[in-house]
Length: 148
Image 1 (cartoon, helix red, strand yellow):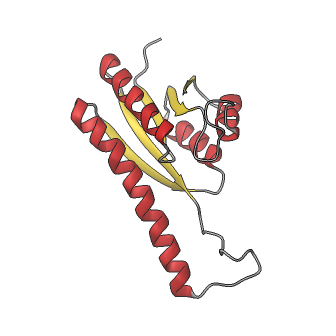
Image 2 (cartoon, rainbow, N blue to C red):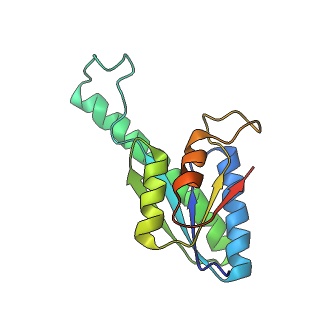
């Protein structure tokens, strides 16, 4: 089955960067287009816990930092696709559960393949498939290629 639209979620981890490189190579060979995705937290939790309130300026600074990190992750992916001449788009969606953002984006855009890392920043390197990846595997509307 030829793939034409590949979704590539990333959390910015080293393994996600390698999954992006793999997806770019695959898309180049298949003549497919890519959608790079970063799911960022809706509102960062206060550092002191749920009960502590943050000043509005502090909250704004945390949100701005989160969005800047999201932009950095997507720009890095875009650079790889540009270098290979692969068509792409970047999506940034809010969500506290990355797998939900990944699944919703894959469905909304009609992606026919998801390429993602086996685990992200929180995963145990090389030992297990991360929980977000497991959830995507279980519920994806299309095939999932897991890079490890």
